[in-house]
Length: 335
Ligand code: G3I
Image (cartoon, rainbow, N blue to C red; front, side, top):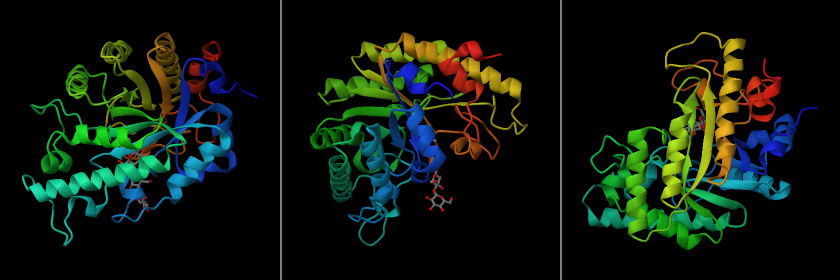
């Protein structure tokens, strides 16, 4: 009987996984409850799934995950209140189905009102269980002059949509921390663009509590020092850090489809070891670490960037502990 992941990590930070509703029963639920003390919805709380038509909420899947957290005393992260993906078709359209336009004040006002209603409804419903929200997700693009990704949010509302999202979330939450979440936050250009946006928010008096570092990384990239540097930078701005979507692809490029070897899985185990050594060393700066999935039978990396048999998580397709698990829990067991 193996050691629970949470029993070696819970004194450092919360340790969670992303889940889909079917994983809330049977062997997946047992594995989850044995090893983790925090969860996040992999999809169920995103705008498209949860408000498919305006004002008509599909609470079922998100409630199932929230109720599982409530029933089992788990912490829960809220993902995500504003994104450019997985949105319902109506969100950026007017009442007769025409696209909302940039520079149209009525359209701007309509989208702001939708943002406020949505955030208020979702945040209030889960105030008792969600401890932290990804208020905005993936809004940074360092190749843009203002550092902001070119999305309908930016085009229709303008750059202050981020301020508004944080203000609406702050007004609705009773306890939840408010996070700006993004990928590649260890990349120096991305990190610096994110830091500039955060500095602007703080200078305007907008409440932001922390940065969510997705941390979708690879077996050989990036160097872990970069992750450490990014965490230190946001700590220096007075923010908390959370690792929100951790996985380590077994592949080093976007095109390789060869089967993942046992040797690679062992290398992955050592990389997980080194990464969690870093997280523990910085545990005063990191309040939570979440893996983007429970086991290799259900990971977005089976279909992205191409269809292939990637194995990025701690447990395998049969829910058995991998070298990655031993890297985190007991590296002395690694070959
Ligand atoms: O819900 C529909 C279902 O009705 C339909 O039958 C099925 C057929 O394709 O698709 C289902 O939707 C899929 C959904 O996952 C739920 O399984 C979408 O096609 C698929 O695109 C979607 O992928 C999700 C992806 O975000 C979308 O961008 C992944 O599961 C999810 O893990 C991934 O998570 C994101 C984070 O939110 C943000 N950071 C990156 C991360 C990885 O992409």
